[in-house]
Length: 321
Image (tube, rainbow, N blue to C red):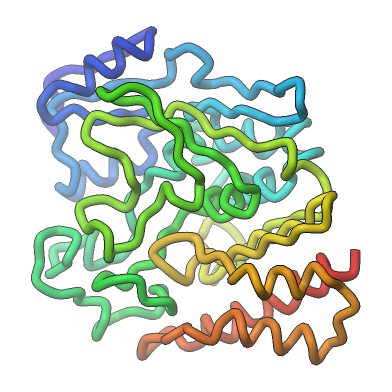
């Protein structure tokens, strides 16, 4: 891995300048970048360390009850921060579910959002749309961990746990790049393969994640994150769910492990859940409606059953609290 230079800028302007260099990439914990370099997927000449930038490793509460988390905040810090746990427990639970404790000690919130997909065809030496191939090998190959909602030619499911919670919490992702700062909703940060295949996010060349902000309107209420894994720990989600019923009664239901991006249940179903007074049959019907457009692949139909069960559990909890 012949990296030519390593930069530790102490200003955002300096980071943008360093990332403007040819084959420069940002890094913080490096828990995904190093494996990508070993696999020959990432081949940077320049590494730009984001951990020394102003506020990049802080969690700051706003006067209005909002919360801003720097991109270089570790997942362990997110999982254990008192305000995150008290006001945004779905995010704390999602961060706590990522990998192992050593990984959470160094892995960052921004890195969790920006990690590349975990498809073995993409990470191995196989034909892959995301690596310039002409077809998706997983579509007719080993696809037991892939998507059940089709959003383009690539059928991979994005692995970020935190992204699922952030979409349910209506978070905003703050970006910084050559064109200056900009903001995108968490629901638009990860993009489906129908939009682009060279990356999984909306980041432009030379751009980086600066922070994530959580609105006061999403604080409190009933919210949680649950992740169904093949193993009890240290694994990626087969299916996950982030659910939130806000103090104003609005409901958000978002599935992970089922599509290229976090998959939010349609607003009409969320409104029906928010109305409350649901019987067990009503809950089952709503869960099935939410998954009506799912098209499982040859080896992952079990995800439909998992998603149905998680949705039923989530709907019952948020509609009855």
